[in-house]
Image: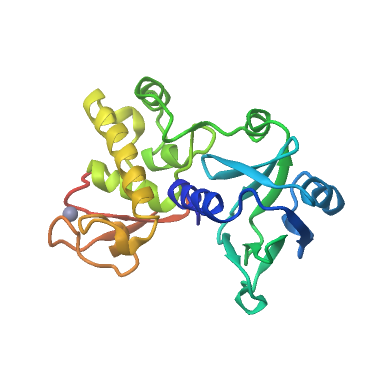
Length: 261
Ligand SMILES: [Zn+2]
């Protein structure tokens, strides 16, 4: 599922491919993805206009048009963007297809239809309406500490709660806790100030490393959990077997030696 580093990678991709080109056609292939706008309205907002800049908050990508307003993309479980010229390169589950005057297209592919396309005149208002918390890269240490320190909820659930901290999902929560040497089921209130400080630093570090790696597991440092989590391998910081448990119904990888309860 696209999390903050993935969405940041898509944002840069849009910057690199799709700005300042006249939009000549807009095709909604499946209306289920439309959030707060009709197909006709969306076409009207985009057609004959250009995208001029991008913004990301949490797992949301905003793309500004030269007229007022922003196209909003939430990638859901499996969404991604692809810029291409030839029809045969179009992804199989394209739900929105934008065509530019240079003959290229930008496709929003979303196999499982959990993604959303919306439109807003105010990013701030949109995030407020969706009850989205502070972006994980923007949150200040003091806010982070105050948010977590009194909670009896498991730390992994706290990190993944988009209303508190926006951008972290299942995979990066595991990585952040692994790098912080904190067991995912630890209650937030049981972490002392030092541990919370360290968690805060590791959170920013992991997200920045992931952005630099273009969110591709193959580019991650060798002592990261990410490239090992799908294979039930040994801990990249030792030689013990990684374990899995369910936290809030989500499969959680951790090291039983480095992340003691
Ligand atoms: Zn370990």
